[in-house]
Length: 243
Image (tube, rainbow, N blue to C red; front, side, top):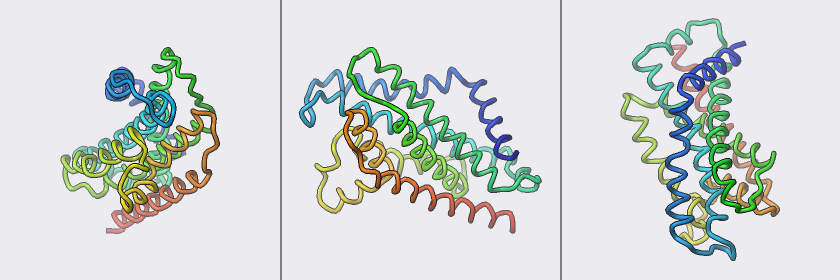
C-alpha cells in the first residue's frame, strides 16, 4: 500500500500541474530538434542527422523528466516542508516509499519521452519506437529517479540540486551519444562515456528506432546502475531513521 500511496501522490501532482509538466517536457527537446536536426541539414552514419538525433533527444528527455520530478520535490519535502520527517515515523515501510518514488519518476520520464515521440511523428522520419523502447525508457527513468533520490538526500540546501544537475546531468545530456556519436571522443574518455546510463539508453533506442539489433548488455548496465543507486538510497534513508 505504501507504493500505491506514493504513486497516488504523484498522480495528483501530475493532474494539478499537467500543462506545466507537458510544456517543460516539450520546449527544450523541440528546440534541440529544430536547431540541430532541421536547422542544420547534415548526414550522420549514412542517414539524415534528424534520424540520429531524435532517439538521443528522447533518451535525454526521459532522463531529465525522471531526475527533475524526484530530486527537486524530495529536496523541498525534506528540507523545507519537513514532510519527509512524517514519512520516517509513519508505519509505511521505507523501502516502499523509495520504490514508489522511483516508479513515479520513471512514469514521468516515459510521459516526457512519449510527448517528444508524438511531436516528431508529422516529420515522417519512419523511426520505430516499440515495446522494447518503452522498457528501456522505463529503466533509464528508474536509474535517474533513483539518482534523484540519492541527490535529494545529499543536498544540504535548495541550491544543491541544480548544482548536481549542472555537474552531472547536463554533461551527460550533451556527451552521452545524444547529439553526436561517442566514438568520436578521445580514447579513455570515450570508454568512460560509453558505459554511462544515458549512453546505453541512447544507443539502444537508436538501434531499435532504425529497426536494427541492439546489445542486450545495455539493459544489464542499466540494471547495475539501478541496483547501486537503490542500495545507496536505502543506506541514506535507514541511516537517517536510526539517528
